[in-house]
Image 1: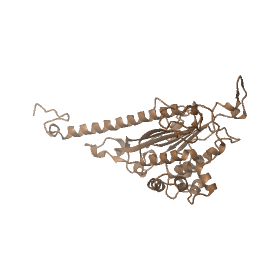
Image 2: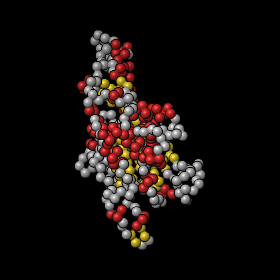
Image 3: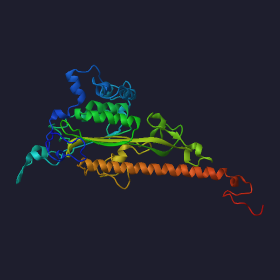
Image 4: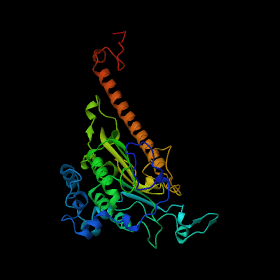
Length: 382
C-alpha cells in the first residue's frame, strides 16, 4: 500500500505502511513556529504563535484557557533561565537511534554505515530544567553530525507549568501540532479519553491518545509549604478536597496532617510515521507527594526507569531496554496507568467507607448509651 494513496476512512486496521522503512527529510522535524516566523505569516509570538492560526483551527475559548495558564511567560524568559526555570528539574528526555538501518542492508551483505556505528542513545543528564529541555529539543532530530538520530523520542514532564508548555510549543514539528495542541488542552482541563487517529489523506501518520483523570487519597500538613508536603491547592490544576470533616474523633495522623483527595491527571500522546520513528509526549500531574523525579528515574545504581509507564512497583519499564513498537509501548503505559488509578481509587473508597462506618458507629443510639462500652455492649452489672 502506498504511503500517500487513498485509504478507507472507516477501516479499523493498522496501515501496513507503518511497518515499512520511510525516510524523513530533516526539515520535516523542523519546529512549526520556526516555519511561521520564517514565512512571516503571523503577527503573534510566544505561546500565541503556536496556538493561534488564521483559519481558527481551535476555538478561541480553548486558546484563551491555554493563554491564561501560560500568562506573560515568553521565549526570552525561557532562554534567560532564571528563577524557578533554572532550579526546577521536572522533565525526562530519552532519544534513541533505531538499530535497524535499511540504508546499509544489501541482500546477503551488511555493511554498517556511519549512522550505525554511532551510539544508540543521545546523552542527557536527566532530569532536565525547562531551559535544558528546550536546548536539547532544538537540536536537529535527524542528520546531526555530532549526535545519533533521534528516531524514537520520549518526553515526560511532571506537573506541567508555563515554562515547560512553552518548550513544547517552541519545538514541536508541523505534523505534531494538532495532536499536541489538543493534548495540552485536554490535560489542562482534566479530560478523559482514549483515541487512535490515522488521517485518511496526505502523508500517512498515526496518532495515539490517552488522557486519564482520577482522584487520589493523600494526607497534607497545613502550614508546611516546602518540599513534598507543599499545599496542593498552590497548583490551580490540583483540585484539593479536604476530607477531615469525616473524622468523628481527633485525627491520629502524625504532625496534624489532614486527609483529603486531589484531582490527578495523566496524558500520553504518540505521533509517528512508522514503527521505528515516533515521538511520545507524557504530561503527569499525579505525583503530588512523590519522591524527587531523579530518585524515581534512578531508584538505585545501574537502574534507569522510564517514568512514563513506570508507576507500579511490580511492573517497571527499563529505559535502557527500549520498546520500539509504538502500539506495544502505548498499551503497556495505558495498562499501568489505569492500574495505578484503580489502586488509588480503591484506597480512596476504602478510607471514606471506613470513616462512614466510624461515624455510624459513633452516632448510633447504642454508642451514646452511657451503660455501653466502646464497642456498644451493655454492662450487665449496671
